[in-house]
Amino acid sequence: MSTQSYNAFSVVQAQFDRIAEMLELDAGTRSFLRIPMREYSFSIPVKMQDGHFEVFRGFRVQYNDARGPAKGGIRFHPLETLDSVRALAAAMTWKCAVADLPLGGGKGGVVCDPHNLTSGELESICRGWVRRIVRDIGPNQDVPAPDVMSTSQHMLWMLDEYETITGGRYPGAFTGKPVGMGGSLGRKEATGFGLVFTLREALKILGVKPEQTTAAVQGFGAVGQAAIEMYQQLGGTVTAVACWNQTDRTSYTFRRAGGIDATELHEITDRFGDIDKTLAEGRGYEVLPGDAWLEQDVDILIPAALENQITAENVARIPDRVRVIAEGANGPTSPEADTALAARNMYIIPDILGNAGGVTCSYFEQVQSNMNYYWQKDEVIGRLNVKMTSAFLDVADFAERKKLTMRDSAYVIAVDRVARACRDRGWV
Ligand code: NAD
Image (cartoon, rainbow, N blue to C red; front, top):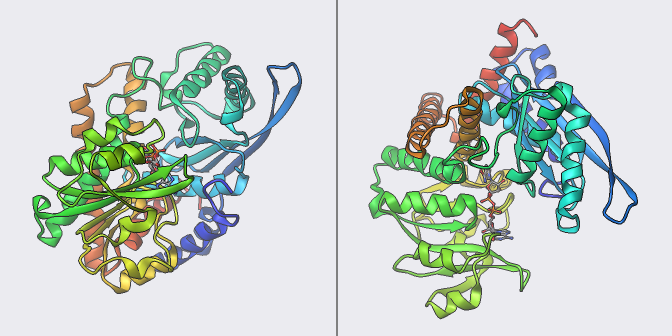
């Protein structure tokens, strides 16, 4: 599977059933919310560079749009399935709801491997994807965005196809567009900055000053780098960063006890977020195994690379000193590890809350595109700060009042908001 296990959607449904039970949702609402509202599965024929035709499978799942147009990325991956797209579309629904965005949740995909496709073939896939679904997407229906292996250039081709067919200019139909062509300033930093805005609030609750804390981070890509930048601005010290090494096909942790220099590391990092091991050693970084990041003697762990990184096998290696786990990645903690950490009273900022800064900024992009008026970066980040802080305080306050974990609190709030929207519309 791509980044989801085979039964990714069953896992999501089991999680939903547990929350529905806690909310005492009626049977009709439960049945309605545990499956997607709409699913599209289609073929995209593409004339390849050598002249032969190849047919690619495309998907779009609009999980629920009771709170607003569906929102979510389109993944390009050879192992994508309708089930993995369903699972991700459900997660987007809850994420948009917990961030209190006026959006529903969706996700799309194409079964393909961009590594083996020419730019022209990818353009044909993008345009073909839009042709299949043009009547059912748009600024008021469903707004796709880039995701795994899809880029801002792909979004621009999709938007161009959409506008060519519909005969107008609708920049709000897609987000993640290049800046200058309808993209938003601040999108690149939004997820990492948003995560640290929630971390800042968590530290306030715990009575800990950020400048007296240290952190270890897994991932030095878009999310990891921006999270480190904002955490360092708050005065925190990052002592270890883990990332992938394509040459050795393994991961490493780079440690410097006095604190890493993110600017220096950035200079020796490629576009995939992989730090050059030899150059890092040359600059005095200690090189440790890939999973050493989670056993560092730090106050904060920031998983910002992949799903399923903190598991039943390694959770006991997390030192007692760790106070907060701020989830930047999607699903970095397995359900078993989550239970073990809850028993240790670990303060977890769950992914659907912690990394909601990305979709929040996509929402800002859509608003700017619909107005055809674009904000300065400071304005984007300022609004992001307000949105993320208020979402965090809602979840923390509810968790405190109802004696729930932060994860359960986030899910209960999200599912409740979506269920109410469905009921208020008279759907269930
Ligand atoms: P990215 O591709 O920019 O960076 C990924 C980082 O993870 C790189 O530093 C890479 O070296 C590292 N990595 C990859 N495999 C690894 C491994 N086996 N062990 C250790 N490190 C490994 O990705 P990103 O955009 O920063 O996204 C990171 C996570 O955050 C993903 O789970 C993504 O779904 C999630 N997320 C991203 C956004 C966003 O706006 N980019 C929004 C929400 C959630």
